Image (tube, rainbow, N blue to C red; front, side, top):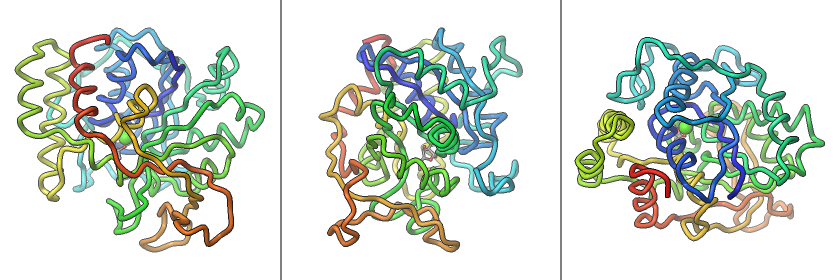
Amino acid sequence: PIPVILDVDTGVDDAVAITLAARCRSIKLLGLVASFGNRPLHYTLRNTLWLKELLALEVPVCKGAASPLCQPDHPEPEDSEHIFHGKEGMGNAVPPPSLATAPDSDDPVAFLADLLEKSEEPVALVPVGPLTNLARLVTARPDLIPKIRVISLMGGAAKGGNVTPYSEVNIYNDPEAAATVFACGAPIIMCGLDCTRDCYLTDGERAQLRQTHRDPLSQILCDGLEGYAASNARFGENCVVHDALAVGCLAYPELLHTSPYYVDICLTPGEHRGQTVVDWEGATGRAANVQVGLRADRDLFVWLVQKSFEGAF
Ligand code: BDR
Ligand code: CA
């Protein structure tokens, strides 16, 4: 199995990604880092720990970044009206008032470095929220970059964003961090909106998941997906389970069609800030630094989600 560390801002689609990583036998989950993103850190960390309990996972969890590298005031306020994942981040699922599980660390650089150092094999890092924790790691510990097998990230968009016309929200939430990670020299697979938009669940597929799987975790994920689907529908979007693609494509490379390009991050203020600028024609003369995901196999993706609801596979 491929050793994997997930960096999440849990989040409904993050929760499905954690479930897939925990249950796919081609993946060995080493740890989870929680970041601000979909909601403030206290919610995303709590949701991550909740998933750990629901899945009976025996992996450590780290409390990660609460804000971006350069804009401490940036995260969405508590009362934001643009909450896709619901007030507490889990759609219509209601998290318990308290959890028995606590984070194992609040130092993401030390946590990630320790897991990388202990692993005999290079590790796949899967960030599906802002890239703040990873940027800190590659800056503080460039000696560990050779231990990164690949960074399979959910973020960016070669064409068209979701938070501005050009920018995808995970990159937009910390563009400076994204620029650091994209330039770090580790192999990168970018699961951006171009391919994650292929990875949606229809109303019928969600109803079938709910009917078929009666266990508490499945029901919680289905409740989460219903709230999230309703938010997406208000913006004319499908129920896109973005984050699970960045996990799934490691175990099933045929899930994703990619091409190598040089990709840079726009840092200037305005609606291009946070854009993943893809050098389609090689105009910069720079070598490709990213395998850009261009489309995904929806049938295989839906099968993977269904299998992960069933149990280990
Ligand atoms: C990304 O933003 C969040 O809503 C999702 O969890 C996903 O990581 C999609 O743009
Ligand atoms: Ca996410």
